Image (cartoon, rainbow, N blue to C red; front, side, top):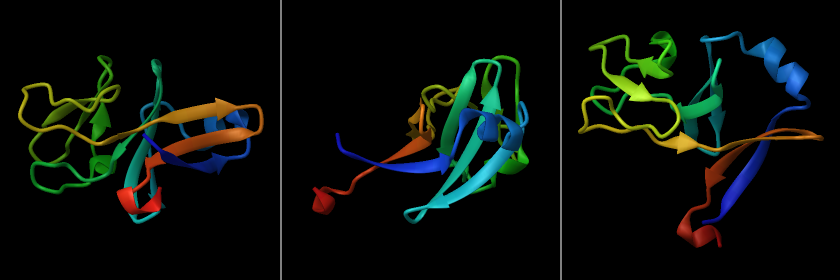
Length: 114
């Protein structure tokens, strides 16, 4: 699988200063709306819209179990793999890489971009 790696922060320290624990930052990259959050388990990026009814997940909250909760109908999704807690719906996830020269997010390349 091929990714576009986009630098979102110059340093890990900058990322930590911009993303408080269990709060959200919405990114718009390559035509995708992404919800970025930092929990005790790490940094995660998932699609910003709930697949159930399109509510903004950035207006939801995180649980101690590392779940993101939709503010509209309280659907819960695992931040690590995007799977819905009750099955059925799942979130698109985006890999995050922290490197010496910055923090990057991976967006899957479309088939025509290879």
